[in-house]
Length: 209
Image 1 (cartoon, one colour):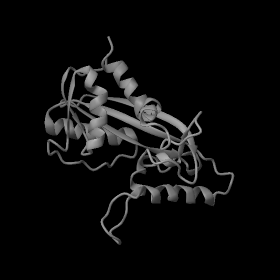
Image 2: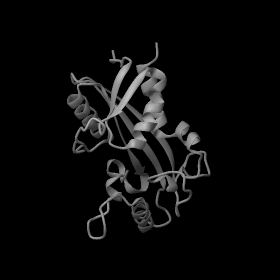
Image 3: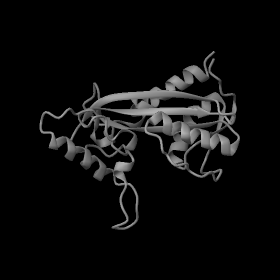
Image 4: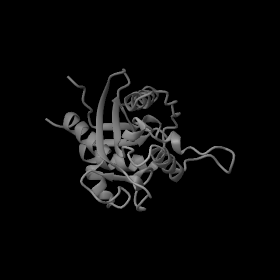
């Protein structure tokens, strides 16, 4: 039987204020008081896993152990069929800028262009089917954990379209849509996204009955 969260404090294993706000809003109806790992001054663990599940669990277990509170972490990314599932778990790494010019950081247009360049190298027959994956992992201080996986399928387009999204959203058109994730209203995107899929599974198991 899967362990369930009680009402109370939950550490969100992120240093990203936007992600904390989004997850806190989703959990508010269930009596959870969310606090970020960043606010607690917890270090960010090295994401050494080779799958979304492994990296989500690394972050959740590290935050739970350091805080002695239940912790929730997510790991997500884009996989492209024509590239054998790349960038996948290395989605964010493909956007990393180097030190050679200015401050290091993430350049998502560069990352989108890298994917497009690799697809073009395969010619017009390249498989542009792709999908976003999200894994939500909950960990407790005693080492117990639970994992929830979400996915949304779509098509990789070029050039990028829309300015509402982030990351690879401008090149991702979800199945059944004509608009990219960056052209869709954020509230609509949140209803159909990979994170929404994973979160619905978490809620169904953690807060039902």
